[in-house]
Length: 144
Image (cartoon, rainbow, N blue to C red; front, side):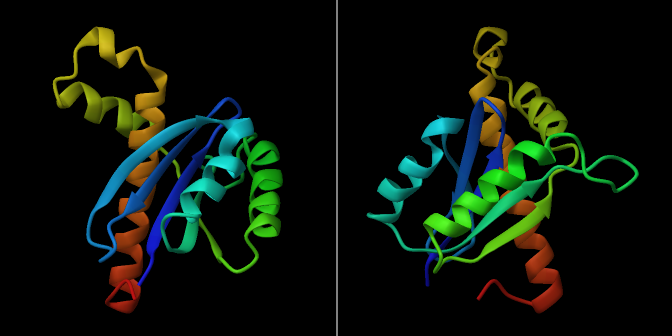
C-alpha cells in the first residue's frame, strides 16, 4: 500500500503533507516554491510509493470556487499529465489556513517562528490530508 500525498497549492508556496505507509498518520513533509512542485514530486516519487494525490480545492462560503481556482486548476492539470498513473482527488480546503494559524499559536510556537509562512502552508496541507482521511474513513470505512 502506498502513501497519500496532500498538496496545499498556492501561487508562491506549496505545502505538502503525506501519510505513513499504513495511512494512519498525516505528517507535514515540506514547503516548496510553486515552480518547483513537479520536480520535487518527481524526486519524492522516485523514493516513495504514492497511491494518489489530494489537492486542496479553494471554495468560498457560498460553496462557489474562490479566485484561487485559476491558479490551482492549471497545476492539477499538469499534475495529472506528469503522473498519469496516480489519481488526483480534490478536497475542500476552506478555513485550512485560518485553522493552521490558530493551531500553530495553540501549539506554543514562538512569535518569531510563526512569521515563517511556510509553516502555515505545511500545517494546511496536513489539515487537508487529515480531513480527507476522515472523510474516506467515514464514507468507506477504511483508507484502502
